[in-house]
Image (cartoon, rainbow, N blue to C red; front, side, top):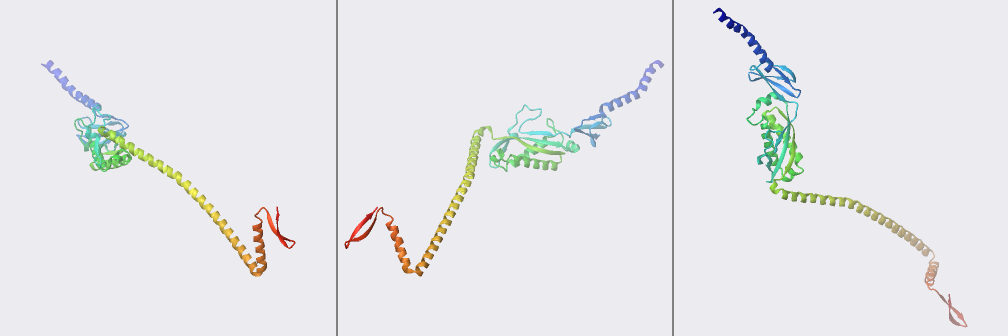
Length: 314
């Protein structure tokens, strides 16, 4: 009987050692953590948030007292809307609800978007929204982004969405999405909202292409007309300036000649007034000289034998 009780006593003496070994093993497996450089550890005590653990080797109380969950905080994440990116269901095509949006002028466009964000508050990120089966915790951000895009696209025309309005759509989307994220308290900071692609639905893409070609042709013709006008106007201004300068020179010459003639007439008038007979004789001789200098032959009368005879001189 004594021999039978001896092995039981030995096992009883070994139980404390086994318990200590189990505690050490539990601490080694569940109490020592390595937090990478781009992550932050969130430590919970009996399921309640306790503290944050920076990168490095960190110690916690063994499970089930404390538990650590690591959250990537130093890496920008990408949420795709309208196509699958880095998802487990990447092979599945997107549904029409994910890509089709109604514009303000009642047209349908297909938009593919990327939302880039950063987790800035790991505690809020983990405990504000719970993960659902088959969905990541970020699905709330996807729904918020879809809601924001729906509201903005509904205030724009289809031409703006497909062309010059993309930059405004991205800026408004980023601002509105960040405002909603802060209102809910997701612990996320939106870095950018990028429109990867925007196209009309395949059923009407040919008509949209025709409209786009017409708009492009219109812009090209307007540009050519503007270039022609910019080249024509300087030439017309130069010609106008040249003609104005020529007219000014002609006017100066005519005015100067008229003034000279007026001064000559005034001088002649004064001479005629001073000696009228002499002036009349001189004017008669000058007029006669001008008239007789025109013919090739000069004819003058002479008297011979009491009769007049006409003599011609070459």
